[in-house]
Length: 331
Ligand SMILES: [Zn+2]
Ligand SMILES: [Zn+2]
Image (cartoon, rainbow, N blue to C red):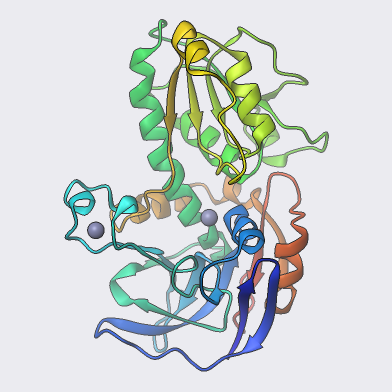
């Protein structure tokens, strides 16, 4: 089968590889249909991995003899270690992550446990690539809402989202629709281009972040500049959430003394996709496909993946996605 293989840092190419063989009883060979191109894939391409790997963890596939489309839960925990016992499965000591430490979806076929494939029925099946990032955002927003209790204001916290990419869009969307959140949301993104999702939600975009205005700043860009801005601009007693994946070389932009003196609460949210959260994400997209369609960007072919991951130029505010399977997704 055709697959995109990362062998060394920045060495990624399309290759013909043998079909994967099931190693466990519940594994099945699925036909890959769509894969979302996540910034994590771009970062992994730059840093490389200890072994040759097929990346791609935002995967929509189909199974032989089944009508439905399926979305992959890419995080397969052991279920036995101390983190799994506490429900913190993303931190499992033995976590198998398809597209990171095991082969993922930038290929014609994917080997995955059957119980980690979730059926969905969207008018536009390509939207399935957003289920994984939305599942991560559901967990992130849950953590943010919990941390709001530490703020000096009990209602209407001024909230600033840094970064209008898909992560920023999903966090904004979930906060906006949550009845327990009464904050006023502003968005800052370095691009001057329009972000169709923020216009659709009528989110106010600011030209430049100002200090001392926001009680809550959610860093969704993953850039060191964004993180620096978050700590510089947040109000004393405020909350900073590190949501975008920081680059490996980024250092913490504030001294412990400043953090202490300003009493800033810092939270982070990495991933957290589980078989329980994925159906919730599916239900949310199913009810509002119009919004989520704004987040789909360019459609590319499997052959274009190496070039896309090396140059990394998604249309602002959208997910570039790969169309692998035979049938057209936008029927
Ligand atoms: Zn991702
Ligand atoms: Zn575990």
